[in-house]
Length: 105
Image (tube, rainbow, N blue to C red):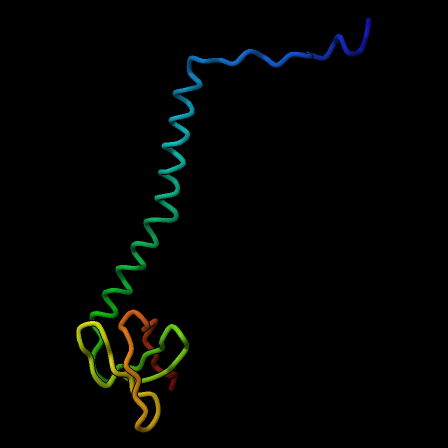
């Protein structure tokens, strides 16, 4: 008896019945898991950031996306005027504001 005769040389025939349904179930589960762990938390974070930007008021200390620290001097619909140092003021978009900055006492 030859050693190669023991090993199966042909692939098993493909099953066509339940494998199609199993494939679609796996795809749906994959999208469900992606939504649960990736899309949902990102949307929550975006809503929190939008709420933070809408609640800004004059005198708030902020940090921009570029790392500039400043104090809000004036707020308009889509822009803010940020006082950086002395008489230096920068006009920037509200979307450039990353977080509230309150120095530790």
